[in-house]
Length: 413
Ligand SMILES: Nc1ncnc2c1ncn2[C@@H]1O[C@H](COP(=O)(O)OP(=O)(O)OP(=O)(O)O)[C@@H](O)[C@H]1O
Ligand SMILES: [Mg+2]
Image (cartoon, rainbow, N blue to C red; front, side, top):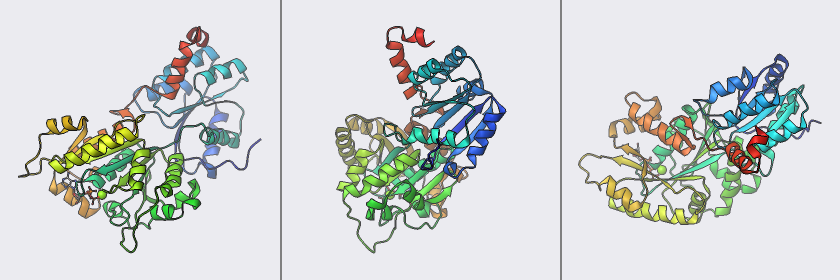
């Protein structure tokens, strides 16, 4: 039975590999449904063989849907290979043509999210996809990355905006940049748009916030990038209770695969809470003494507050400013006990032109090296290495658990 309360799907990327014409048509029909409007869906033929070919050298989307007409042994062997290519968080849905309970069990044991038996209608398909993300035990869709400067004015926002642009542009992942510098935020200027305020409405009245409401607070920048803009006025003050940010953080993580928080250089209850709750924290620092002290305090404090999360990452900014005496980078990172994820050189001409034109570095001539640096930061923070997926996934973890069971591997293979 199709549930009419099926919610719209989040901003996810879905790739479907079909083997038969009726399933391909059903998937195409589902694409037109309003609940799928936020998703990016690619459909191709070739079933699991085509999926293996596609992901051997490329990252996997949020959901991979595979139609199969093969026997179960062939399917399971191919799925085991596919598991090795799946990024963390990728869900796999299988559409088969036989109602085979032992196969269903084997698929669930391997971490496959759904096994659907064709023929199915577009709404059954959409409901199954929605169910994966509605499950209260499901991992949230989004990865939240908070960027803060160790000092004011050292390029933290510039890095946050270019990072978001790279995740959206180079990785084609739906991304939202949230400008938390309520009074002075520059995201609108840097993307050359004049957005209505977004984030303030969400934190002023958190009781109204849900995944539908936050969509209205987005301003579209590019097909994969949205901005939740700051008011950027000083008509009021912005001393919020930290609890006001929780609904919007939760709604964003349920809805958008990549969330970049541009955190102002402030230490308040709400900035600290937000930094503590993000999936990744980036501390931006320039190599001088005040930056060193502040970065050390931030990294040590946040690492202690997030004992089960990755340590804050360090990005060096404005390195090599002419005539400025700088601390040696080696000593700087050693004192911080934190290697630098990247080092952004000082370049007044290119950064100045980008800021004045409202352009991202990816769209500027003569910025190829900087573009490569941002691409690397983007891949690292999204849990992928050099455009290659990391091999560890939920799928893998389940497989390892299965293999460690007595007779696990042989029974499953
Ligand atoms: N690597 C760089 N080389 C030269 N100029 C830079 C560099 N990075 C940023 N800038 C310039 O420095 C200025 C401040 O940058 P930005 O607003 O990103 O800093 P911030 O750390 O976010 O500041 P705030 O404390 O106001 O939030 C901008 O004009 C920007 O164009
Ligand atoms: Mg800033």
